[in-house]
Each structure stands twice: as C-alpha cells, then as structure tokens.
Image (tube, rainbow, N blue to C red):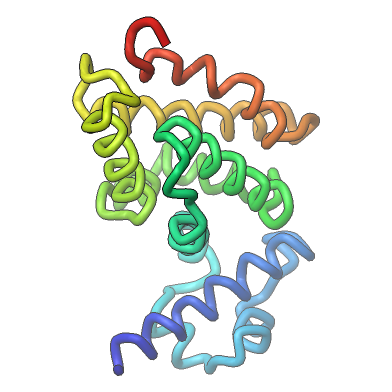
Length: 197
C-alpha cells in the first residue's frame, strides 16, 4: 500500500508540473506552484525531485501513463500494424494538446547531453514492453515479417517516433505532429510487413 501511495504522490507531482509547464511555460513555473497544484507538500516534492530541472526527465513517465491507458483500449481484432499506428496517433495527439514544443525540445536536448540516465531509452518502460508485446504477437501470427528480431523492430519504431518528434521541435511545431506522422509513419514501417503485403 505504501508503494502505491508513493507512486501516486510522485505521479501527482509529475502531472501537475507538466500541466503548469504547458499552461505557463517551464521558466514561469515555480516549485511552489507545482506543490500547490499537486496537493502535496514541499517535503514530498524534494523526496522525489532535487528541483524543477529534475522534472524534465519525467516526461517519459507521463508518456508511459498514457501508454498504460492506451493498452486497455487496443482493439484485439486489430492487426499489429494498426495497433502500432493507433498508439502513435494517440500519443502524438496528447503531445500536441499538452506538451509544448519548447518542453519537448528541452527533454530531447537533455537526453542528448546527459551523462546520467537516458529515460527515453529505458527498455523497462511501459512503452518498450508494449511495443515488444505487439510486435512479438504480430510476428507469431504472420502479420509482421520475421527477417528482423523483435528488438530490432522495436528500435526502428522508437527511432522513427523520436525522429518525428525531433523534426517537429526543429520546425517549431509549425505543422500537426499527429497528422504528419499519420502520413509518413506507415511508409517508415513498411519494412515490418511480410513480403507481398
């Protein structure tokens, strides 16, 4: 029970922080505001985070919460490619509606220069577990080719998504991330399909 309460407290802080970052910008958000909006305490905040900068690495946690929610909405009748495209469409819609270009760019840049943990590459994330499951099932049922390993296909998929997010940030969010991805991701992933499909 204590572990669940701790996870809930941390989650409240993370969700409040990203809500505020989106609404008023990272620079204009204070730790005190995050504590107030999350209905937690200063002690709880500093138990989980050294300061506001430490929250930049939590965007992957926010994404994973979304993936947990989406995993329950996956249509079992959909094929593997449809499931992958559904996850991408829903996550990118969330990014467009609740994560500013500036914040996403900050996260991506911190992952490039950090000597510590690279949260986006953590293979224990819900994201990677879900991708491995979908791709593995797709390979077993013949919906996806078996020329590459599950790990290699997961890497290609994740790399494609990061490339799309990076380009969106580079272009200052001048186009719809979700719509652009819907038009190009199927081509990126065409090598996943069995020959003749």
